Amino acid sequence: MATANASRPATPRRVAAVRSARRHEGARITVRRPEFDFSDTPKYWFLDNAFLTRYMDGMAALFPDGEMFFVNSVRAVRDEVTDEALQKEISAFIGQEAMHAKAHREFDAYLAQTGLPIHDCEQVAVRLLGLVKPLKSKKLELAITAALEHFTATWAQRLLTHQPSRDRMLAPEMRRLFTWHAIEESEHKTVAFDVYKAVGGGYPMRAGAMVGAMVILPAALAYIELKLLRHDRQLFNVKGWAKGLWYLFGPTGFFPPTIPVLFDYFRPDFHPDDHDAGEAFEARKRELKLDEMAVAQGA
Ligand SMILES: [Fe+2]
Ligand SMILES: [Fe+2]
Image (cartoon, rainbow, N blue to C red; front, top):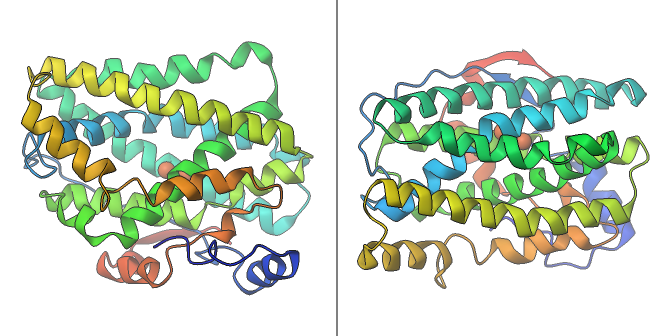
């Protein structure tokens, strides 16, 4: 899985060697502009299961505004970044996240047409991330972005390496949307972290932001899940819950292998390059023909 490097001790020499050999998974971050047609998406496109589908729909509802928060937090400090290569990565990061926000906004518009209160769910991201605005700390906002980017990169790498999870997406367009997004999250996983370091961000704030993310993000996802299942009148579908919880948290489920990777963020010499999707990264890129889709080169 995505933790091939984490199984070995993270000595400074090994970390330096990994970074010099492979600055980040993509080596070059590519901005792409895929088009999606969601019109044939079945109501329960994830394993024909309400719990799992609404979990994914709810998570995706956090993306548009969450990703624009990421973009703004990096953009707010980019004048302080003197490294030319990192400046190019910032441009590509902004381009990729803007495309993700656009694609997910389109999917949310489709869901809203079906009557789902998805725009209310989008507001959860707006309200939560808005809580830090009064603190007027660019560094804290960047620390939050770096923490949440570790979540997205970790879950992305799990999706890229875990074929059953992709197979369970019964709608090909949804599989394409999430796989494309996962590839790009893996490509730009280092950017916010490196910018945070470049502008003098320290360990206590970085770790504190991750503690906050670990408490608030799962709570937000649970709140949205309950809201959407109640809307669908599926709140008491015990069989659906059991199946969904098994596929997410069971011994062969999606989340268990991601937990130690998330906690690895607390290691003082952690770097996002310490984890990757291995060969699955290039394999998924080939399957989606992403190299034919580039619109701009970031580096
Ligand atoms: Fe993204
Ligand atoms: Fe991202």
